[in-house]
Length: 387
Image 1 (tube, helix red, strand yellow):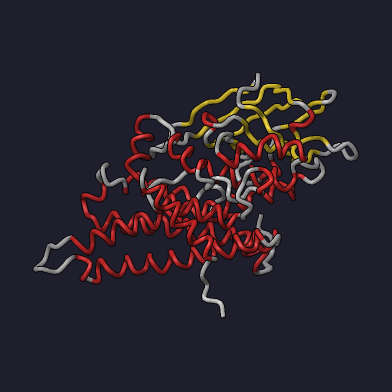
Image 2: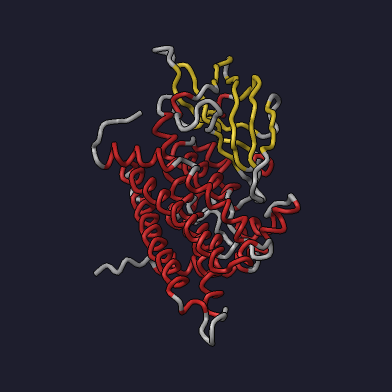
């Protein structure tokens, strides 16, 4: 009889990650964000304990688990107040794509470093004029002898300043038809012709956002990951883990905010000798968030189970749903947590105000709510395509 519980190994993994991340916590992250620093110590510690590479095959230095295990790591770190955005990018997207489609030489070159955290890879797909329409990507790769020349630009690319390489989604000409098709390339962050510009954001985070310009960046032939004729399949093999990890990030954030609010509601007394949590005006919004959070977590776990079972289409459906649900509850939980605290909810020390803005990102990235609703309407319900 199923009790909807995770395997004991994953439950133990969750406990170990939460304990380690709690040693750093929100204060550590907030200080790094304010000072312009990076979470180098936390990242190295997580890598040393094998937590960063749980989804990478054992033969390449990983834990041999799946995306469900990696999502559990990120969720627990975020719940402890120490989320790591680059796990979404380096381990989940790039690690998954290279692990499934890379050559043996590429796997040996990049996966061990991704697994232990010594090599970080960013991911670049978004363009200013393409938005959510990946078919409108204009960054092009042209064959030049045995290599490639990359030209174009990308925007809102996370953590480029702390990465050694970038997995770039470009388009190359099909030799048979002449039409452009999506292809994936690994570009070193110190490649000549690559320019990086920081995008100033309203909320504080150790991970910065960048606009990138590729001005005839020359790449060797083996910079191409996988089959140049299977770009879309390979792309979505990375985007499904991205959505699952986005859900885990938001769900962990929700757990952190809810725990803060519940603790305050249990101990803060204003009227008589009762804590404010005894009043329905405080209790009911918190209970509602708890229900929404459990729903989002179940969707996250189902999406991960489908992906790890090799069901890419099923995983795509539930990864989108999980990301949608988690983004919603993150906004709700941080809002309710601020409201529960009253004026103190907006203090810098508590950290909820910054989180309130950061949580809103879960409704936008890596894909907007509206595009998810389009996907569900079309693929889950069979309605006509609207765009």
